[in-house]
Length: 72
Image 1 (cartoon, rainbow, N blue to C red):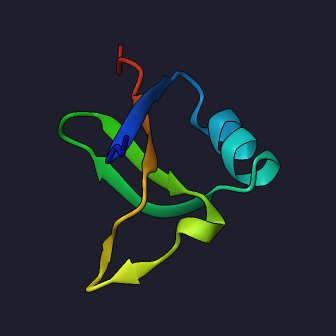
Image 2: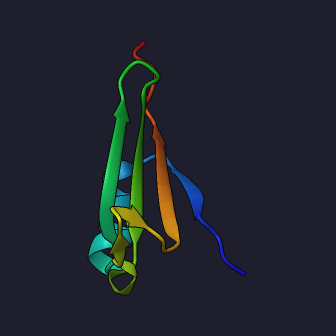
Image 3: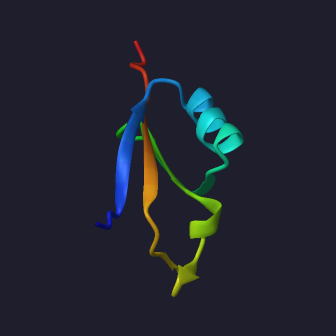
């Protein structure tokens, strides 16, 4: 079975990046910040999966989703 990516929602982006990147060794390959919708997406992959062909990652990814807190 293959999968494109799986999403994990977080309430603390810094702690999640520390865990997945600093402790587990995953690599951040893309970050999308959407200010109007107030969210951040971070895509991670394993170091051995960093095979890039035609600028497209073909390996499975973990997507960290962070919804920004309300402004109020």
